Image: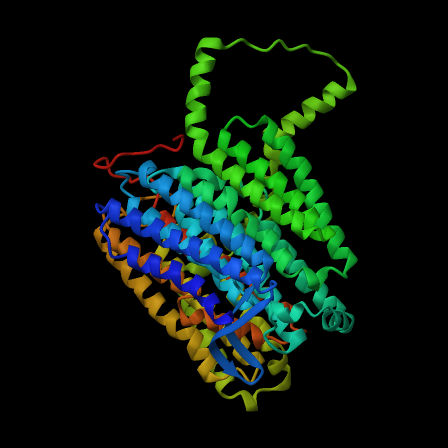
Length: 623
């Protein structure tokens, strides 16, 4: 029975691959392929779940494929099936099928018709990989694909300013959640000394004993999981990204941010529940986040002027209640609550354009202004203050910008001089010196052996921050990105003598190809277009669609997306960072956090947004 689980991963992957071979004009074939594949998945998972219920609901686990094994390091795909997986998978298949049938007509003759269906099928594959995951590595692969498909769907209307801008905002917070998951993986490797699976976490006695032995490490691990779950489910204080992600098509908003993707934070807490159910402080934090989010999101939803924002905050408030239900152990109630909320939000988003049309018609003929009474009481002042705060969405967007991203930009701008030719040359020389120390490791003085890796990790972090703040020259920014990754790899190699050449090669192999391809594309674009900077959006995807596609692929390969060997390399690198190397972990985590933002920012600025040429239609910022 376990061996059949892999079918539910292969079916959506097959659908995505087949959909790539159609042209944009073959709308009927594209749509029919998409909803047929998802329909088959829905019928199959319902039949499988029925048979599973007949077999008295055994918990199933399948170790599917080993990517890499060396010593106590083993990276493998693992699939898992229980009642949570059954509910999430059936719900996901049903809602995706409905949305794809609706999209067949909703997006008729849209220039991005094929692109939409391709991306939704890739999302559905990632969603299934996440909900069927049996260990953190498998879950993280699905989690990463969900992030990139989210970016592509928010920026679906790529000729407009706001969708592209909000796609970058969304992926920036998603990336913060990704880094928290990577740190959770790193901690898990060091405290368990193996790749732990979710079925092993179900053994409460072993888990409780393990928590007592490694309490503070487990506390850090669970804190990272909680932050990742809060970001994915748009919980306080990370709520502001969800309404901004609604800039994509209504159908993608329904499947992503109304029903499926936004509930995966709840799924992560549900899947790791046995790990933190005995730790009171984590349970209190989950409940507090849920209560605060439910109250604040409800207040915001009541005063918003746009229907998508109202629905987004209403969904956030309900998910806040689900956080409470997870912590209290009311998991059956939670699953019913989740299904009801997901189906309701999907329905609301799909009918919202029609409802708005009827409401505007009704308002035009039957409008009567509300009579307001002014009073100076304390309750009225308090009500007005809350109203004003809620209209401004409690300034959560500005808070996140000032807290997380502005400091990075400030540091990068203050060291902008390093991005000059002589600055890069100096950094190359320093890197070469470090490489010599790595080769002559046995002859290195003890003091250098102890601290040199921290220096190179710090420089790698500084370089990527400078690239993040670079606005004048994207080619310089790309060179700085390459250099920063070289510094990070070298810092870990200098730390750990057991970091073998093969492991370095696994990470570097795809980076070299992606970096070279990226440079060639930028040089070709520079030759074709006189203006090439990062001060604005230029929309060069209009004139150079092939360059845009290949640069996106090189960007995704550069940040270690799961279809590249560098994804395994990232896991191997973090595995070789000792558990007490907090500074090195911090520098490396910040570097990987800013890396994806910098790379996708270059892609978005050059290839997305309103085209500057008057020969193309211009969608202004207010659109």
